[in-house]
Image 1 (cartoon, helix red, strand yellow):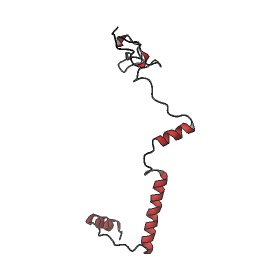
Image 2: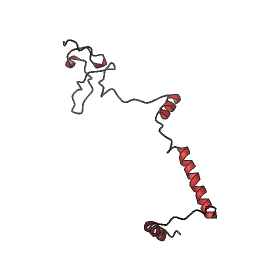
Image 3: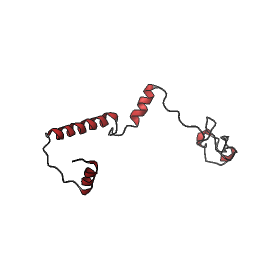
Image 4: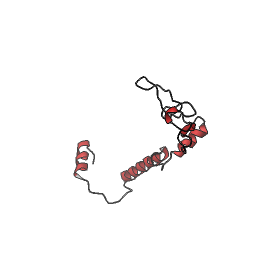
Length: 117
């Protein structure tokens, strides 16, 4: 036993890491994982994935924790869609008398191909 090292990770006894409990998960080669086991009996790599929140409150909390800016939320997309339709309608009735930007040759080609004016 080594002196001054203290306990190993995951409540394994101090000393030689090879003497810690093994994980015993099956490997791809058919053998067993010899990594040190955690209290649940598996190593840190074979402990199993999280099953995620189960309750509606937990799911809501998880959804809010992952929220960044809301630019791509359903409400924001719908608002941008409404603005585009409104702007298009204003241009149709002539209510938007702003300067027309000069079209690029690519835009002219696309308009010509699709018959847009």
